[in-house]
Amino acid sequence: MGTKPTTYDLRPTTYRVLAIDPGFERLGIAVIERDKKTRKEVLLHSECFKTKSSLPFPERLSLLGNRVREIIKKFKPEALAVETLFFTTNQKTAMRVSEARGVIIYEAARNGLPVHEYTPLQIKTAVTGYGKATKEQINSMVGKLIVVSKKISSDDEMDAIACGITCLAHLKF
Image 1: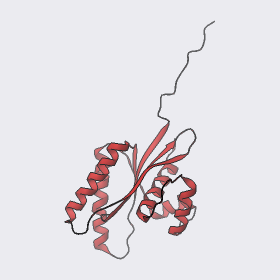
Image 2 (image 1 turned 180 degrees about the horizontal axis):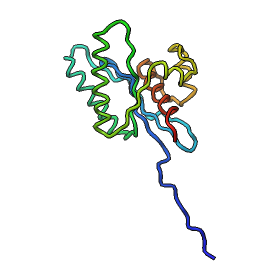
Image 3 (image 1 turned 90 degrees about the horizontal axis):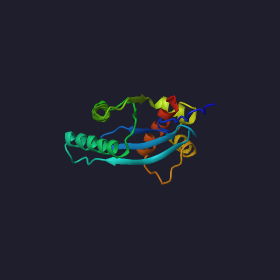
Image 4 (image 1 turned 45 degrees about the horizontal axis):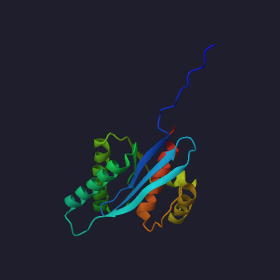
């Protein structure tokens, strides 16, 4: 009578996402991890990275790319979640933010990260259940969905966290 051999599940027990609210003046960044067993999310890092308006635009893009690269190197995420653009008025700003998104997506691709893109409507719906939710409603729900241990004063940072929550809600484990 033999005993059954012990088997171990060697798959990672967490999934980590780098989430970004794109911009070239202010870049919302969040790193969120989900425990696959408890299905709980943890905010590992968030910030609003700023570039100076006095710098030439190409230098600002370089700073954005460098910061994203540093975050990827430090936190080793498995995916990038990024908000898609929705602009109705200022086309020059839309073009510049599109270029910033290109730098961000390039850094993700350079590091072999799959890219998940979400519209503002998808993010609002995933976080609040309502596609026309206000910033206040989103901020309130983010605080209920994930433990945020610091005061977040930037909408860009909060939007990145909401984008990360959306990504984790959409992914199947």
